[in-house]
Amino acid sequence: MTAADAEAQYYQAVEEFFVSRRGDPLFLSNADWMLIRRWRLQGLPLRIVLRGIADALEGHAHSWNRERKVGSLRYCEAEVEVARERWERALAIGAEPGVDIATSLLGFANALEVAKGFGPKAATAAARAAAGIKALAARPGVAREVEGELRTFEAEILAAIRAEAEPGQLRGIEAAVEATLARYRERMPAKVFGELRAQSIIRELLAAHQLPRLSLFGI
Image 1 (tube, rainbow, N blue to C red):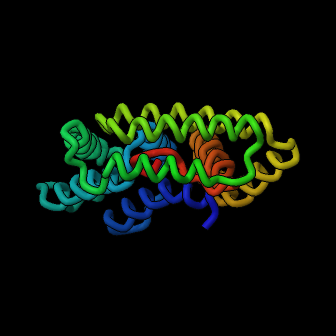
Image 2 (cartoon, rainbow, N blue to C red):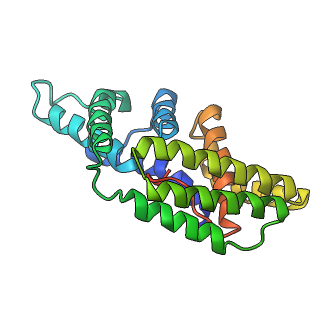
Image 3 (cartoon, one colour):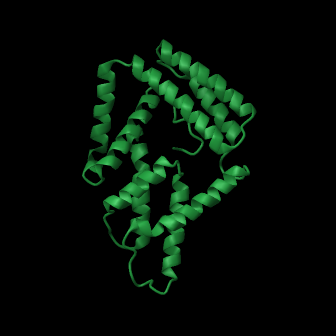
């Protein structure tokens, strides 16, 4: 699986889960795709979105109008919001299953320290990020706050990678992403496809140095 495939998987998984649970084929509307994009930009883990969709459709299956098919993903929006609120309360008290902040942070720091192929600027940014992330691991704090700091470190590393990359290398990555995502272009609104493309390029730039996205939540 390419990095672009991994990024597209979020959108595809939401679409397939909703359609399969709904019970018959349905093409998502532009508004539905925009809703998935908003969840992605908010950093909602896929499992939280799917939990909300499942709760919404389960509730519909036991409602008085259960014979009427759910016509849009937006029907599930309120339950996804409820699932998000439960998740954020769990994060606030450090009770989110599967999120061991200190262990995750040390893993990111190690990946940055052993990454290959950096130019001088990117190497400096990666070393600075590794040191900062180790400091975070010593005092992990609230997951949401840690996530914000990780995004800052990632943005600095990406800026350095882009600054030092050969134009042909960047064009090659962009072309590969375009080819991988071609099947989504006609299905999604341009704004959604543009976000998917941008995030896929970020994944590819990091993957070229054997780096993951710096996120506790699999963004």
